[in-house]
Length: 115
Length: 270
Image 1: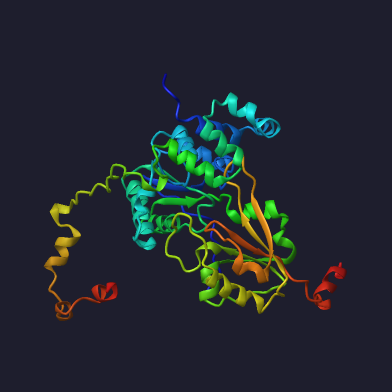
Image 2 (image 1 turned 30 degrees about the horizontal axis):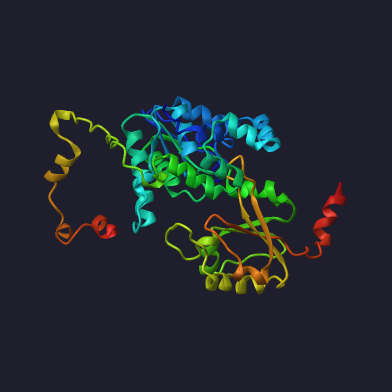
């Protein structure tokens, strides 16, 4: 029989959005834990009232991985570069045609500022 | 020069936009209706949250939800991590997507990438804005029963408070964030504030408060089955206290000075 690993997650999500269930849990925690089909380890964590223990249990349910140690997602594509029109004379090309000022050999002010 | 009135971001005709929202401290219950609506309708959702329950909830609200937590790494500078997160958001918007970025707590409190991404996108002509969320300080006001309107409230990051010798008024409430991370570059498992550093903080506070002034060590509840941690200790005992990274120190105000009769007289002016 497949064991649902998300019981604790679902249980905490339900409690977060249902104050009636929070009241029922406060009145009879064992009954609510049984209703949520929490495992023994999950019950210990939840009954402890200790956030650190719940966190450890959630991470254990998540194949032992902390949320901070996930793999990187697929890279987000950068913006598509617009094709320049105007007979192919882009801004960069125009700059190249300008006569370079003498100071440029030593490094422009902009470059200096970046350093 | 004429005064200027800022009425929020200007409308942009560029495709791609960013809305930054907060998921609050206590799991998903503190996300606002407005934040949930933006998460649902976004074409891409990116998030930095610190628990798998909120993560599951975000993915349920919007299947495109993707974590940015992988940018954190041991030994890596926080500045680099935050810049990379901001760049990730900027690139998604520049690619033309309607992006929603969700951060735990308030998305603009102790969250560099949200502010940086908004600044960069606005400069480039994209629509980008932030929605308010619930921060630890908001939880503290509710749990500890503090009204910042009564005596005022000063809020500092604890290390910054010491390093920059921040001036403060002890007759106004004082909140010190991240007290458990005094001088620490990153969080480690089971990390506690070093007693010798707490002693330095105590010495600074003792210049303004009596030794037996009761302060509050506070931790907001993150899970619905847990309550907040509110521990009251005398200031002189702070160096011996266990202070975790998530602990916020609240220093109640000393009694008010005598009010200025000239100002108080304004109430009688009719």
